[in-house]
Length: 193
Image (cartoon, rainbow, N blue to C red; front, top):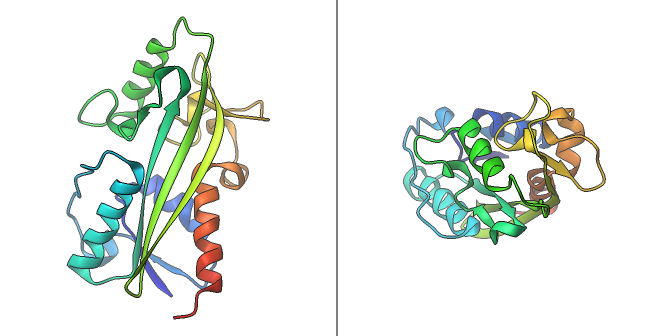
């Protein structure tokens, strides 16, 4: 089965490729000669995932899936949420996003947060949504060199390391994206066209 993953984020593409079975051939946007930047204009993660998946299916005709992920911080009433990638403004910059969040939480005791990923799959004319959540907390400073985005300042519940200190196999088993992708994989494994 061939599926397009509607993302320009090479880190995300690599992470997802590691989780999919070999029976699924994952195509990138570059593989289908799509160099368009789809604006994430929806106010929910699910809305943005649908927007991107529908764009690829409508314009290029491929079965595909797209995701959107947000970091939701309790004391900030769920912010940065759907705006996580551009929290510190445009152009997007992970370091600036982390520094802005750390500054906002500087004097706060409640550092509970969760990552949420929404995936929209367009397959053979039908649309299916999947979601994954990973609860944790925001650290007071960066820890680790691996991962991307907010990984150096997010520590999942039950672990002593940040996402950026974990091996990718360990992170993929417990992460928001890993949980959502596993639901996608389970669906595709049982899928009969």
